[in-house]
Image 1 (cartoon, one colour):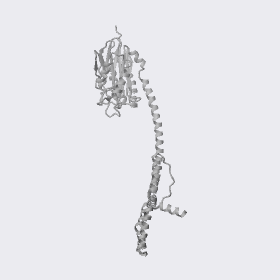
Image 2 (cartoon, helix red, strand yellow; image 1 turned 180 degrees about the vertical axis):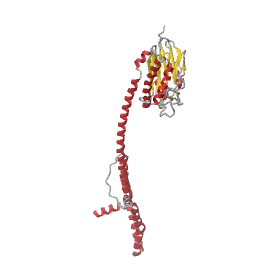
Image 3 (cartoon, one colour; image 1 turned 60 degrees about the vertical axis):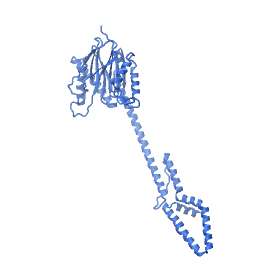
Image 4 (cartoon, helix red, strand yellow; image 1 turned 45 degrees about the vertical axis):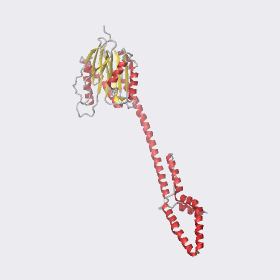
Length: 401
């Protein structure tokens, strides 16, 4: 029986073409030839009996022979290949022992060997991908920790919330960076007869924008010191003009050949509570004034600060105005008005922002930051955040006689 198993194994290893050639040779050549020779050797009656016997045997053995031939030809190999594909589908890249390659072999065996090495390649790539993902996760964790610390440093440069509370009788501040750090900021400084307060929108988002805010805060203090020595301590336009020169000099942006073109938009107010006077200067950032159930917009100069295209000697203008007790003022960067949303995917716009101020005119300012953030988030819907957002609303208690 061993020789039968060995012979069956050798036949099973034949290529499909060889099996088909042998089958066709037997059915189309040898069988008709044997019938012809038998018919010549025997009489017609015996020949007919042999043919009938062969037909009956063929009918009886049709199903077993069909299974045997299909098994020898392809079924077994196809089943093994399907099992191997299923394991690959389940992520099982376990390698199997394969017989050595021969000159002529079963076509399905070649396909099985190819699947074997494909599994090997997938396993190797999965291992490399897992290693790369691990390194990426570690790098992302390190970057996240660095950005968290950068956010802590950026916040340390901002005025303390308690200090802002000492300047105003009522106020709110919405400072919402698109990323954990960003280019929006705010600044305050006390003077002899009042204080400065500014809302700042620097170039960029994320870490580059945050770097710009640190530079701007340092140069804001320097610009204010220079103006104080020159006797222009309470003139916000002079402070912005000096800040423009300092940023252009610090970043080397006095000529078109500079390596960068960074700067900021800003709204700056100097408030004298004793005199009941507010002086505003703006670099493309407006001041909103709530009065007589309306919101008036004071536009700043149409010139950014520090950019290559901004003239170094540009003189920013100051706009003084008197304020009454309980009057409200608002400064904002363009992140709120430029946020796209709504059913028509339009920007939030200044009109909606002014409507928000009017709708909440009778309510305390404290807590309006949360309401404004909710209104912006609801309007945004599924749209992505476009920019950092900073909005400062405040009232000043007049201290004059």
